[in-house]
Length: 110
Image (cartoon, rainbow, N blue to C red; front, side, top):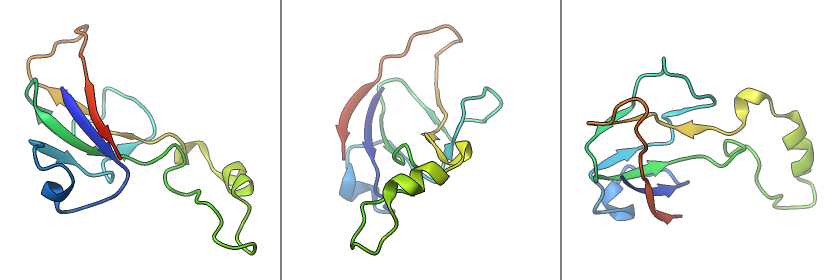
């Protein structure tokens, strides 16, 4: 499985990663792993997948642009568990069975 990960949203997949077979937008995130969450994508082995993801703060913490902006550490302290560490997916890989090991190659991170 080959993956490119970006943090920017785009509808024009070809402009970011033209060789990708699939694209998963960062709107397909969860903040926990659970087998009851249905796959957002079914992919074959060795397909290229463009996965958009958020940073660990779900994009809610940004550097201050002026001295009047909120202190980023105060924002971090106010976040709830449901706002932290979002994961994109899950992705179902055709032919993989429970207990299989999957090798993932990160082609690029932007």
